[in-house]
Length: 159
Image (tube, rainbow, N blue to C red; front, side, top):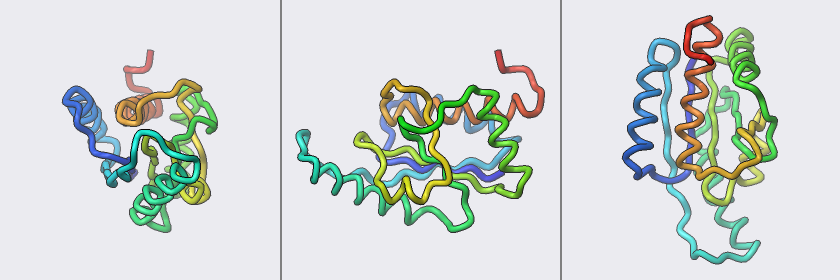
């Protein structure tokens, strides 16, 4: 399986970089994982609603430019479907079984995802109603993808 993690902004925190590198390495035997960072749109701290939409749209254009037509897109969104680790694993396994070997997970910037990205998405996934920093979400996502592969192969890790 080819997994692409599309994300807005450059990761700077060393501990997150190390954690993501560790899980990406662990995923090596199971899938090819690429992480693609698109630049975040520079904006002042306080934005009007219209300015927020503009920022999300510009970031969304950058994201959409990186998604091929044959990719199954899963947008991470607070209003997406919440799944257990087992359900998440089952979903990835179903995609692979039915010929969807290219999957892109999309993590928006601090303002979220544009309507255009959400429309292009095949599904929306939520890791809960808590708001997490988008940088931390990368680490949580890559760990859950690793966990999913371990669950699907009946290998020890899931507890």
